[in-house]
Length: 194
Image 1: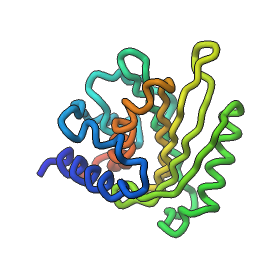
Image 2: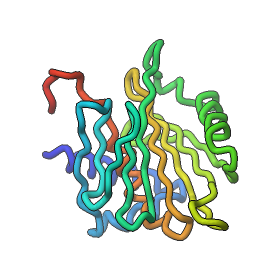
Image 3: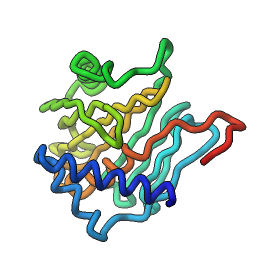
C-alpha cells in the first residue's frame, strides 16, 4: 500500500471518528471523489515533508518554512518548523496549558486576530492543537479565516497555518486537514527513506 493510500485511509478514519463532534461533515466532500491530486514537497534545505495539491505554487521561506498557494490565490498554507530544545512533547504535554501558550503566540503574531477558537484534538494518531480565528484579508474590508494546526513530532514542532477568504474556507478545509495530516519530519541527511 502506498504512503498516499495509507494517509488517505487514516484521514478517512479520522474524519469518520470526528463526525460526532459536528465539524467533520465538510471534510467528506472530496472523499467521495473530488479529492485533488497531491504531491510530496521534499527538499534537503527544509526539515519537513508535506503533501500539497499539484496545482498549487510553492514559495520558499526562510529556513524551516514554505508557503503553498492555490493557483487563484483563494487559499494558502504556510508550514514552518520550530526545533524543540529539551525533549519531545508527549501526548500528555499537549493539553490546556500548551493550547493556551499557542493562543498567546497567535495573539502576539496576529494582533488583529478576532474570534480565536482553540481546541486539542487527535489527527492521524497525533495529539495536536487546532486554532481557528479571523484575520484581515489582503483587500480592505475583507476577512480571512485562519486555521493553525500545531503538531509536535519528536523534537519538531510544526505549525501548519491555513488561510482562505471567508467565502472559500469551507471549500479548502479538507485540503488543509489533509496537508496537516501529511506533515512529517524530513529524514536526516543520508538516512534511508521509506
